[in-house]
Image (cartoon, rainbow, N blue to C red):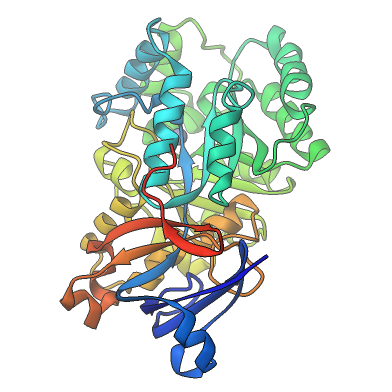
Length: 417
Ligand SMILES: [Zn+2]
């Protein structure tokens, strides 16, 4: 291993406020410390790579993607009518000319270039074996991929077969370095209860994380509460609706109670979780929520309760969601958008959602902050003269460049793909 150090006008460690004129030190791909440069030894200060007009931030954690849609040039519409949007997504999925591998490759490249080192990816196919080269390239930048295999279906006769496939074709496969398997029971409105239960049991047996879309739309709440509304109409149209599958008065809490027994759970969106449900989630140590700001806004849902969740103690992570609902896969743009909407928030506070909270949500303790012992995965943000004075107000206006340690030197790598 070889020691290196880099000095910048500001370092945002991810788990606390920024440090002015600071030095980040490392050995190989491991961080050994971060401190104000005046406290560093002379020899370290002199040998450090110096970025006097930049900030250093941890590699971002994009906790929710569906890379299979990354070849879409623009989002699928109408995003402001959930059941109609699902209809259009199904149509797009069924169109035969989609090249999933090509889409995933371009998605990985786009996510990496925008400063994300880790993704929480939901996939309908096991692309990891065919794209091992791309995974290697991703992990060569010290990043990681959590691959949640998505499962859905209402047919009770197919439950056993689906569970067997997940067990044998996915969970029992040899491990790939930097790639972590997880399970995604898609959503309450797309799962037979027996399939949901079987997937929960598999997550416990294999000790893998689970990501589930929950309380995403009013239509989902209507389906659960009184078996009516736009999603029920859609399921009837598709000949999938079965009377008696959901009992009157069902709600997201019923799912939360089962999910709370699992090793780690990422609740995707949670837009319509009630106060009682938010308090329930806050009491679970290994349960997080991922909020996708621009997708949420495009869907025209009521305001997302992320501040209420944060106040209750829930680690809220951030994601881009897919290009089916968002114009790009840049978590950096997500942060910029969120800060513009909430200028009262400090940049370091929002950055924590995109770093340390994401690491917690995905169960990757080596990531998410710049502190001794963690992975040296970080980006340089070039700041304007005004931003240099007060980056808490304007950090996200800067240009982001992922950094890779090459031969013991922090080096900008805008394109590894
Ligand atoms: Zn999603």
